[in-house]
Amino acid sequence: MAPAHRPPRSARAKALRRHLLIYLGLVPFLVITVFPVFWMAITAVKQEADLYRMDAVPFWFHQAPTWKNFDILFNRTFYRAWIVNTGAISFWVSVITLLTAVPAGYALARLRLPFAENLGIGIFMTYLVPAIILFIPLARVVAELDLQDSWWSLVVIYPTFTIPFCTWLLMGFFKTVPFEIEEAAMVDGCGQLGALLRVVLPVSWPGLITAVIFSFTLSMQDFLYSLAFVSISEQKPVPLGVATELIRGDVYFWGSLMAGALLVGVPVAIIYNLFLDKFISGITGAAIK
Amino acid sequence: MTGSARGAPSPGAVGVAVAGRAGARSWWRTPTARRYVFGYSLLAPAVLYVGLLVGVPFVFSLYLAVSDAAVGEPVARFVGLENFASILESTTFYVALRNTLVFTVGAGILKGLLGTTLAFLLVQPFRGRRVVRALVVIPFTLPIAISVLGWKWMFDSQFSVLNWALSRVGLIGAYGSADWPVWLGQPHLALLSVMFVNVWRGFPFGAIVLLAGMTSVAPEILEAAKVDGASFLQRFRKIIVPMIAPILFIGTAFDTVFTLSDLSIVYLLTNGGPDGATEILPTLAYNTGIRAGALGRGAAISLFLFPLLLPAMVLLLRTLRRRQY
Image (cartoon, rainbow over all chains, first blue to last red; front, side, top):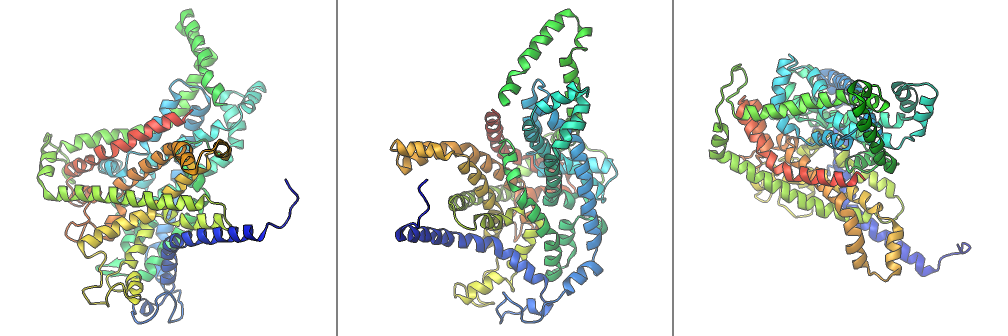
């Protein structure tokens, strides 16, 4: 490398121009992706009358911002129950997913089983069998289990997509854990199960956390199953509750709707965002880095 | 690492063959056999769960489709292909099928164009790239039902913020005039609107998948090609395209599966209306199977999605298999 020196003026001008062009190209994309969130957020804290006026610029407040919409949401709807339901569903789905996908991913990645690759791909392909084909027969399953109109039906159903996805993800993850640590553990007298529980799992916690995160975010992306199987207000998860309960006939309570939507939507989006690369490398089959 | 994992089964297989001759009983005691038993019992819970709640229901949906099963009627009769025949006779089905195809193909092309443009912008090094990337993927990371509600409000017939802006810059007329678009109330606009929301949600996903593919092309290879005198176009066609093509296929296939099977956008924005203009197969299946309670017919309608999904799934299967190694 040559010693640092000021780049000539023309090079700096060139870099500046390049940056300007890129930003210029990105502006439309940023507007279209960010504006809806801004609009939802401002709607959530506007007064009712401020929402419905056509004479003033709608992008800012013309009456003082208000928390009234949140008050309605928490005190006059089942929003608290929806949040509790969503939390409980995600918790149990994560538990089921971890208990099944961790051993499966480990077995597929490390035990050199015959047909392991094909089994792995087979399990992953079930992730692609869409809800829209399965929801009608699953309605019968839910009825047989006597879980109609209870969020427990979703606890049973959601692992049908979280297990395939997380097994695949963890399979990629376990492939990156060095074989030596298990061998060392087994030399030290651990059995195969002991090596898995005492040595492999403790160093695999980033993979386990990723699996929990995806159990949670993928569960939050569902709409069809909850719509089809849960129709009692108190039993709904947040996305379904917000979408169906804050409407009276033709009247939409836009303020509370947007408040309820963003209150869970934004945290989910942030978490998902942080783990997006893992999601992408997971579905494209590349090794998890 | 993968090399050792791949090479390993052969000694195991030899062990099986040798032990097999020595007698079944002692084979069960070999380390290989113990590893297999251990391995398959670790796999069993996941395989059983998915088998029972995906495999069995899938087969059951085939059975439902040839029965007259309905909500509240415990006994279903076998009706052969009657459901399919009556579906093929109804005009609603063809409208839904046509809308599904227009929706999937139209939105797919737009997502491809926008996603590619965005990926080429994001692959450049520039200041603030991480922040920009985090912001442009918002549509994909927000739970779908939640962002669709935001769009429903933005497409409001009277207080639509889009219309307010368009009207201010003079692209559309004033409220109440014939030039005031009612996005979700006019047939063509409604189909465009639901497609638009799908594109809005999907193109960041395409861009990020492509970006991952582009950044996996080692700069050294491009540098070497440059030194060897390859022009930009040659490098693009001979190196970049072949290397990102598989990943692009995967992205497209996933997106097609998501798009074909998603009902929430249409259900929440228009529920198929106005007058069937945005009816797609998922909404038709839901409204027939759950709302109207005709489980058999609903299952038959949703099975019509399968031939549409199959090419995408086969493509994925082949690409994933190749990428394994």
